[in-house]
Length: 168
Image: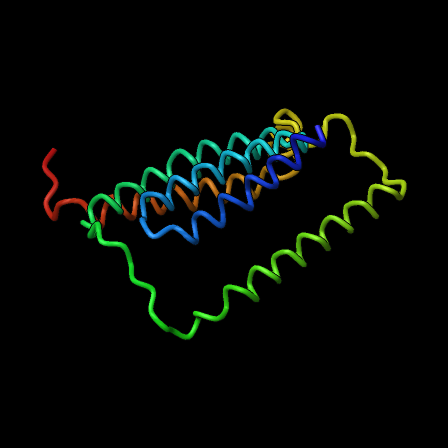
C-alpha cells in the first residue's frame, strides 16, 4: 500500500507540472484528469473511500467535462503561445528548487512521523457508512440547513432564468 501511495504521489506531482507547463488547454485538462484520478487512488490508499468517490464523481466527472466544453466553445487558436521575456521568465529555476526542497521536507517528515508511535485510526474511520451515520445523526441540522439553502438557490435560479410569463 505504501508503494502505491508513493506512485500516486509522483503521478500527482508530474501531472500537476504537466497541467501548468502545457501550452495547449486540452492537454492541460487531460493532465488534470490524470491528477484527479491519481488523487482518488491516493484517497483509497488512505482508506477514505467516500473522498475518492466524490473526487471521481464531482471533479473528474462534472468539473472536467465543464472545462472541456468551455475550451471547445472558446475557439482557441492552435498556435502555441510564444514565451517572451516577461517578469516570470527567471522564476522557473527557483520554483523547481523550492518544489524539490518541499518534497524532501515532506519525505523527511513522513519518515520521522512513521518512526514514532502513532495511534492508528479506528477500523471504520473514513468509511462511507460511518460518514452517513455521522451526517444523519450528529450533523443532521447542518445537513438540513444545507439542503434548504440549495433548494432556495435552485428555485431562485429557475425563477431568474425562466420566462416572464408562465402559462399553466
